[in-house]
Image (cartoon, rainbow, N blue to C red):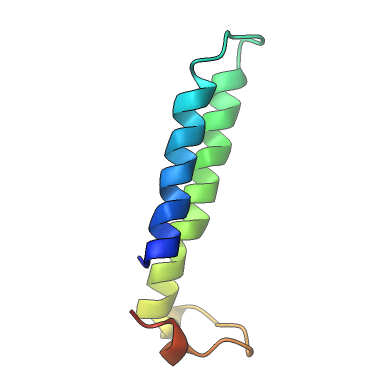
Length: 70
């Protein structure tokens, strides 16, 4: 992953750590937040796979694989 992607994943970790410090308001709040943070992290992390294995992922026409290589 590139530096920007690592920073974004780290922000989701910070979000989770800050969220669990809040008092629980609804029974499933933590599960919902955890689910969505997992989804956000998966989206961010799949970017590296798309760059490394472009044959498996259709890249947008406006983005070339070469400019996304690390």
